[in-house]
Length: 246
Image 1 (tube, rainbow, N blue to C red):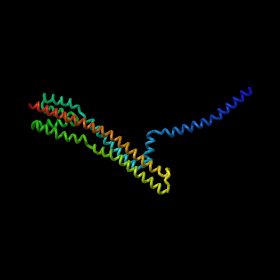
Image 2 (cartoon, rainbow, N blue to C red):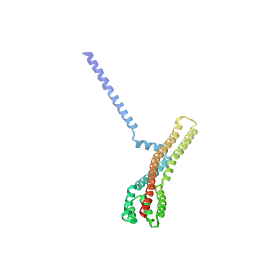
Image 3 (cartoon, rainbow, N blue to C red):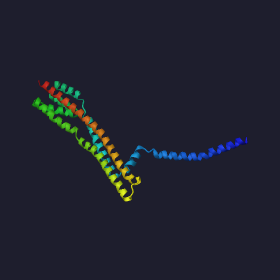
Image 4 (cartoon, rainbow, N blue to C red):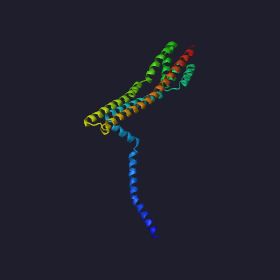
């Protein structure tokens, strides 16, 4: 019996003596996990600050301007998208029932570059089919220019962002060598700051270029799709005008 009480006493001491240490260790681990599990926003903000305000700020401006242009183009192109087959059918019916004026009214009530091209061709119909075809071709070029408006600026920001990042890299390396020269030592601690800035500016520049490149490719494919529809619809309109002219 005495031995049992001794064992129980030792066990109690071990448990209750280890408990505060275990609790303290758990608390320390919890604090460490809380520090390690930062949100993406906090991590991004910290890295942005570490990269330096000058070049990181310029890269951020390039991202903002590029996204503004991309969003504006996407909205414009989506609004410019027209069901060309349906429009051709409506214009055909209008020409058959009410003539050129009825077809022009259909084009006025339809949004998009295809309807605008149709209207210009119908407006020259009184001068003959050849004049209407020339009007369609000429105004088609104008509409194509409107579709591609500001896309060159987007390509500029795509090229500019990584170049700014690489420039930050060069400046960061120069700063690292200046630190080596000032300290007279080439230890990792001396050069780590400059190299870190160099790598961060490069990463942010490449990320901005990748994001804008995705938008750029989408916009280009959208413009190509609309242009193809414009060309097909223009051919269909000329065929309609020739048929109804007879």
